[in-house]
Length: 220
Picture 1 (cartoon, rainbow, N blue to C red):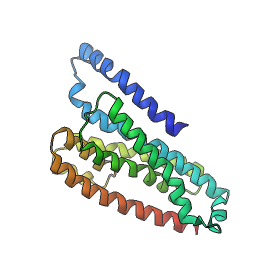
Picture 2: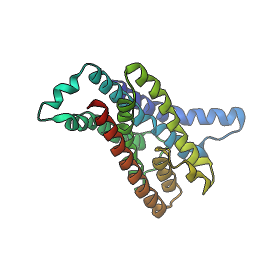
Picture 3: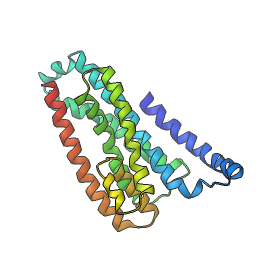
Picture 4: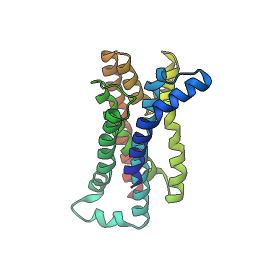
């Protein structure tokens, strides 16, 4: 429920709260939020894969502690099949809810380049889940590591406010790539967005492969 209702709450609050808040801040302090709507969109978009990814990672830790994975290993599903099965739902939720944010939040622009950002955001959820399941020894450690995932919010900050080429020093942050794709689309730079998407996709696939191997090694 947290994986579903949390992102829906983010969409609703953004839809009905961002513009009134922007108007109030401009009246009170003379500071306009409207020019920063692109940054706000990328920042809020990151909360959507973060929630289902974290919930799935904690669920996988729970099932590992109860040795449920040992039962899957002797079935036709196998442990690798279990990983695919468990990671499918958060990935699907990330795709659908991120698309809903772009369509209904009221602060995003409908551009073809958004597909690049949405694709990379969909890969964030399984990466977060595998990170928790592979490196946490129990649910308590999983909760602690989930707090560290808050560092992922540095990605859009780097992409939006640090000038090029210095911002590419933050390319090791996974969330840098979808944020950069979206902002390039807003700035009407489709070719640059496509190039960043290609590099970001390779980065995410390598990260997902490494985390998957670490998880399977952990449960062997």
